[in-house]
Length: 182
Image 1: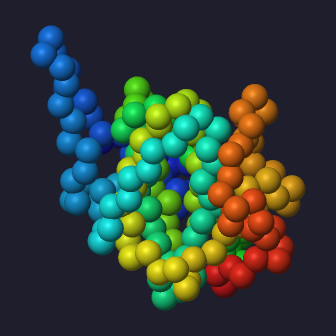
Image 2: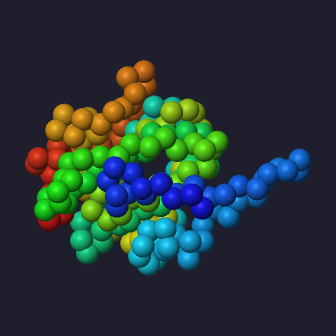
């Protein structure tokens, strides 16, 4: 597995090895020991989520408050997304900073987003399937969002894709007024 530490070192891109021949390919997409070693800590996943999105669907920026804060391991099975993570820990030296990574069915990359980061993605093509593992269960009472186009965060969304949003995402507060992690 290739491990890439990004400019926010807690957010990590993992790319599993792929073995190909004239019959197709094989890849071990998840191995607990390899992920724990890559991240430098033990991670326990409790839930898998799978979404399918049309081009332009923007999901996020979502997170859950403690005690239900979630880490996520995100990958694209089909299609492509611009996947983003924003540090929402007010006490962090990197508060408000972000990482943006293109995840595609061709590059096989996965993105580890630890608890304390808001997560979102923009589907770049029709029929994009995203699968992600979470370290805590969905807890509707703990669920929060920050605005996808908050100028205080200034995410690099593509200008040629008009985002399609859920009502809760369209009305989410900016990072300066959202209920965040300390």
